[in-house]
Image (cartoon, rainbow, N blue to C red; front, side, top):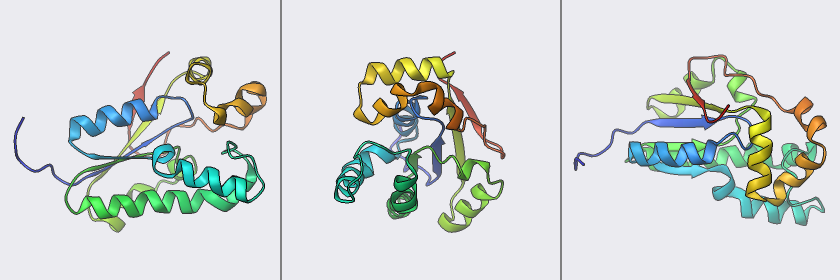
Amino acid sequence: MSDARPVPQLHVVCGPPAGGKTVYGRALAARERAVLLDIDIATGPVVEAGMEAAGLSRDDRDSPSYKEIFREPVYEALFQLAETNLAQLPVVVVGPFTRESQDAAWPARLEGRFEVPVEVHFVFCQPEVRRARMIARGEDRDLAKLEKWDEYLRTTAEERPVFPHVWVDTGS
């Protein structure tokens, strides 16, 4: 392994829940010698406490209340952490980024904000594989999805980004 300093670059790993974003993001961060900023790790405990304080289920990240109160601040916290680290190192940010992945101008805005190259990775697998992964990981945040799986699938965006990206199939 070279002692050369890695070139700062922002890698955004996005896709539907249980698609393999975290596992892929960890491997990408190791390969790129990058800082890993995963949405669940970086912001999970604060979001859970905030949801409880607001009288909401601490595990419901799909509710309109979560999206209204936490979505934008959570993403902004990840990007502020990324900005701090990009001065020295590449960064891998992992999160759904559902709305952003459907905005053709999003990568250019990120490049303008951070002044580094941006590469978006879309992680995907079939719904039945995601369901099995949710069951296997046993996270409380997945219970509502699993209890109403068909309803959840109807409301879950799975569209590929509308801009050039790295396609990552984590299981068929």
